[in-house]
Image (cartoon, one colour):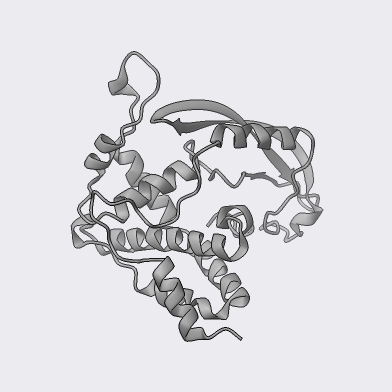
Length: 250
């Protein structure tokens, strides 16, 4: 039988919650960015071959279970992918499902994307980590150090802006349903993980926020990054592949 105390120490060693210096590499897990273009191509192929199953929550209007949804149509979605600090725009396919009970339609996103975001999750998480896990990092410093832009003549009109990173962190920091459900699944699988205790210890530098609302968002983002790594170590898959769709991406 696993010793809860020793298990707790093990997770503390592997999932450090301390800040790092600006010249150190973050030890917080990030989704792999290598092969993102190939992932999109593979997902498009699976969508075209009708190999994607519906994993959405029940219909909020008539409460019909998602396993009774029918495939309705395909929708093209433009994604921005950062490869070697160059932003590539590629086309992905999304499935639209229809509820047979009331006719309401829903879009299902792949694990590497979020609704209403053109940039992919691995890129969003990587930049969020760099900002949050380095105590003295600012948004302006972040985009200067890891500048990214399109292959266009006028770079000033198309580069990655500090406000973009700010919005990404706002999105990632406002996923309470995903966070709560993920904790439940981890606790069921590994009671010694003590995820809630670790999450409660996560903080952010006072230099990164002015209002308490922004502090709450920043802490929430650190928590989702932390729980994503722990979920991957526990289940060998991403929170955004299994939990986010069921929670309605919220």
